[in-house]
Image (tube, rainbow, N blue to C red; front, side, top):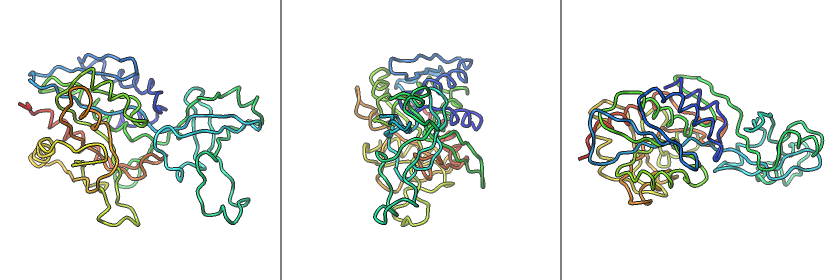
Length: 339
């Protein structure tokens, strides 16, 4: 799974520009004996036959997109003004290196240096609308040779292993989920199973909406990254989950109350298989599960997540052991008949 993970994280793929991610996934699953197709909005839908057929349609899902930025204006000095694609905290943006998807042009997100800030400005984080991207152009005319309004970029690829089994990279949310699903598809399955690699989760789960209506699954298991709280300054009662403590099972978030039946099944399977797991201890965030629960004919939903520090930044941080626990638990759950 680590080989898939690095490959996918190094690809530039903000919401709406997931083509290269999708092609990499197809290259990794095309010889597995699965059937796959791509829909009108870029979702990759996969069906893999198992040894048996279930009466219920079971879908495992992850999203291919990552947060990024889109150019909205180019000024006369050649600076690029932009907006965020997805939920990006402005505190993690200024000073970051970025790469443009279309051209590969490099840039840096710039803002007013502390030396020329007024006393009132110091210590405050500028809104993204007041930041700009510097690509080294000296004029609008020069900048337009390389970028246009509407071009998108992401944080620079920066996959790195460090510490005791930790991985730091942009886009671990949710390229790790994609890697886990690819690992499942390339294994022998007990039951026929559907898989979805969706687009545009970061801007409202648009891809999952289409997948829900196309597949109409009875049961959906979403593989995601979720915000960990094990950092300095976070009270214990607000620590959603802890890096290194295993797969995270959510009971409720801002978009979903998860199927109690599926949560109990996941806990039972994890205990039976000796897979490390933990509950998500705060109600926060959301993911594609909420869409599957409400769209089309509705579905019972479960989220299995890996705890991530510094999510939606240039340096998402996950533990390899947690990602492996998520993959193992998803595979073990898929061995059940769901009768």
